[in-house]
Image (cartoon, rainbow over all chains, first blue to last red; front, top):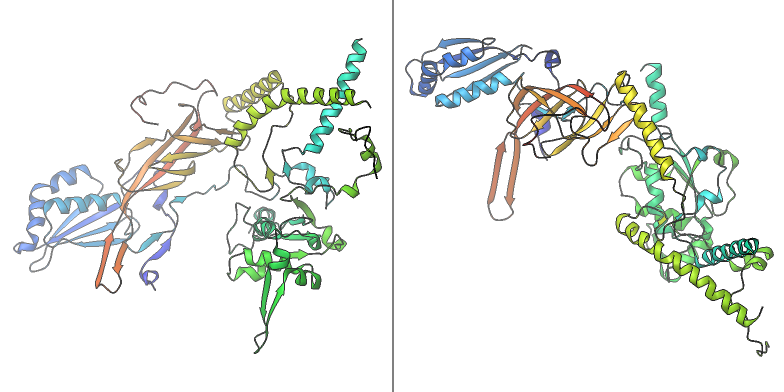
Length: 185
Length: 178
Length: 202
């Protein structure tokens, strides 16, 4: 019924170069801003380059920003990551704030994740600390000596005593008390 | 797979043989308990594709107790596929013909009707009495507890138990026992 | 036996039983309200038990001392913890990566300490919190590695035979967290003081 399996590949979490174990480093290598000097669709891009680009570059010195003026073409943001992945965003008719938001998103990503569905939200290299479960963890050791079928293990976990058993108990307690009284005398 | 990991895999996916005594138990409620062990649902490693089901041996299936009128009124329908091949069998009739069928059908019908069901049922071994082949009994390492306590029959008490039980009431002195 | 003696015996029996019953019913009432039905268990009055309180406290002290010794000599090994984060619970160890879905303010490169710890386990012991483990006892540090958007998810609505159909495409912000340390600091029942958690809601 659904065709998402054709364009969405399921994958587990991957982190390039064990990012975060030691120091965190930005995964974005370079950004290319392509824009037209004249066309109205590039207006936001041109304004961004004028006003906000320098602050962005100062904040992220590890990213190389290239600018490519291309006449009569739509503005594009193209990002290349440390693992070789590329991603391009069509910036046609974007405002300068939108372009800044996209750049900040690209800065925090490590690769293009649009065609990947995460199978699990957790990744461990050590799934078991106390040892993986076997049918013998939490097993009552008295089962090792039992012979099956065993009448003691067959009955339910009865916490309620029957009237018969209670009467027997009362009678036995009474007998014990009688004996104790006689001893006291 | 390294030798250590292979042993770990073998330990975690070990198949356990359980035994269950069905004397005087409700087969339909027992089915709900037994199917959990058959399918491996009690295991934290459970997954339908994991093949983690265990074997269950059920003894004394000839002694099961159906609730209320069910012996007289529960009907098992079977159609051979041929015209005029419909048959309606009452529970007591089926039980006399084959004392394991009622429990087997109860467990089969308590499971979801998926493709694992027939494979899981192959791991179920039902015996009408307590005679189980020794080769199967030797594998058993766990007993599934019954659901209802089985009281001792009044004619099965030993003479010593009867004699040592406290007497609560007695006939009045002027009562004449006929 | 005589009638009179029998009556005496029966009354003697009932008196004794009455005393036991009043005590056991009280406990049974609490039991019944708190226990849930399990397979093949029949719940009713409490069974008889001999409870030695001194012995139990000594055993507890023994165990706590052993755990403290292990921690002092840092011989507990790898620890795992169950942590409550953004409304969900995760089982984490050192070095694993977590994804938090939805709006989450921390930025890339931020160091975060996770304080809502429900359970800590080592290979020899487990500390179960009720519901949380003691404040300051467990030190869990994490770094934010990545902030991305998920794959495009679709919310499809249709009303049949009414010519109404809408597809909503959306992407959830995701934050990748790398767990740097899971450690037990200090002693049990004597954890180091933690500052800065006064405004936190646990």
